[in-house]
Length: 230
Image 1 (cartoon, rainbow, N blue to C red):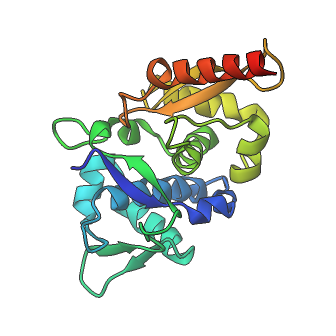
Image 2: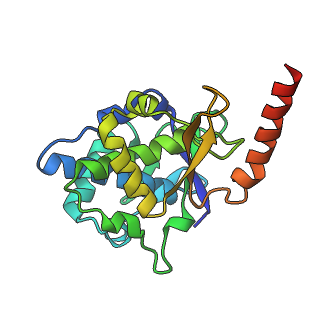
């Protein structure tokens, strides 16, 4: 398992996360399952762009039933994010082109236990809109991460714009990700004025050596130099 894998993100930039809306009953659970399956397919994609995943393996990793896996894959196929192969249990990520800018770094190895399970996925009950919001927010962070600074700077308005998550529900989604160790929240200097701050987010298990201590000092020094110049 690689530390990270490429995930196509152009569909996220095109506000495609809004299409993964909550619906009461089984449809909401199927939508959650679809995003879990999308990440697992990305985790297991080989150099040829193919992922060989049986229903049993997905079930073991994420704790999903065969019915939810089937329904989730149908959603992904219908939305053009996954292409089924003629070979059994072989899937392809659609729109994956690492020569362009339409992809992001999705954490992989760090999410798995020694027994090959993803604890976070197995903790989801598939009965809550907040769980869906958390998965959407995580994928949005993958797409919008500043690779130079290894940080995600997104206001609540931007999060709502790209994902469709209600502003009032964003803190709950952030809490799920933080409690499960998928993200870390930091206070950053805002460009509103010299005293304002804003929240920034870092994805766990991804470029851990690049953080506020290694990149933030340069930013502070640059800002101070600019103020002195002007």
